[in-house]
Structure formats: C-alpha cells, structure tokens
Image (tube, rainbow over all chains, first blue to last red; front, top):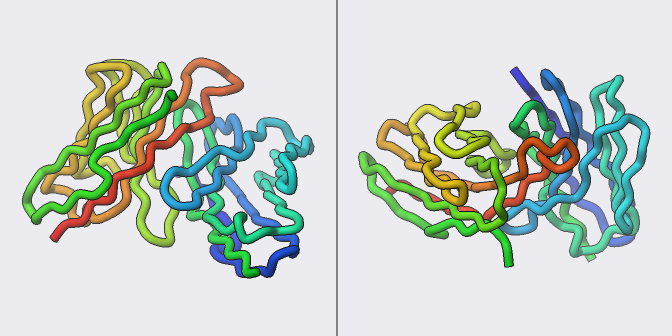
Length: 109
Length: 116
C-alpha cells in the first residue's frame, strides 16, 4: 500500500524562525514528490520534485528530494505570520497522488 | 479565469439520504479527482478519472459513486452506504499524459458535508 508520512504534525514558531518540514514516502512506480500549501480551503501548489539533490527555491521557501532515502524536506526561512497554513506532501505515481497527513504550521508574531 | 467550481459549499443531509456534489472545470484538463479531508488528516483519494467515460476507485471508494460523461464535469454522489460521510470534500484536476505537468493538481474550494 502506498504511504506518505509527514513530520511533525504540528509546529508553532515565532516570526523570523526557520522551519524544516519532513516527508517520507513508500510508493510503487514513484514519479514525483509535490508540496502544497493549504491556508483555508483549496491547497495551492508549491513545488514539484523529480530528481534527487536538486533544490527548488521560491523566495523564502525551498525543497529538496532524496530518492535513495525516499525523503523530502521543505524549508521556510525568516517565517512570517502569512506562512501559517497546513503544508501537504504528495507522492505521484501512475496517475494518482497519495497525500500525507500534513504539517500544521503556526507562526506567532 | 480558468478554474474549478465546486457546489454547494456547505451541505446538510439527514442519515439515509444520497447527496451529489458538483465539480466543474474549465481548464481543459483530462484528469479529475475527488479527495476527502477529515480534521487533522491529509487528503484521501475517493475516485479519479483520466479520461471521459472511465474512472478508477481510490483508497476509500466504498459508499461513493461518480460519473464522467463530460470532460469538464465529475460529480460525486455520497450514498447512504457511506458510514461516516461528514467531511470536507475536495475536487481537483490535472493534465494527463504530459510528463512534466501531469502531476500538479488544481483544486476547487471544497464542499463541506454535514450529516445530521
């Protein structure tokens, strides 16, 4: 059975802190690893990773994939209150995405 | 603007009733998906469809049914057989058959179903 595990499940930090969110996966016919941000209702796409060791960056967010260890991390530097959200990791294989339970990040002023 | 429209946003149902959640997209995406989200949990796949007139069961299909008669529409029926239907339901779509982009999902705003 395909499985995606995220940790921690929740995290509370103060503005300016740096956070690292973890995602491990066991998925047959793995094709790519995706990160989404869910603030209120609809998750929005952050990153798609297909190759090991290549960092993707967007502003203060970055992510990297390790296909040997079946692991990905999402880093957020200099956190802001607007980063408060649920961060979802998903593994894609052969037509469907399997999601983890998400990490709920709360950034306090 | 292209996007996915889900309706209704909120729905209340009595036990024993079937309800249908609507999902329409104008992104010209081939693939469509239904996910269920419970509090503190991630998204669990109910059904998905890669092309018109074809669909596959996801991980939690029991008690649900779908149809895909048109490319832009993928309605979900929550039947009375679904034992615990109260949840937040998300519809999504993606391109298909394109290696670099097929995986990225675009989501609707969701439908919250409460069974009384």
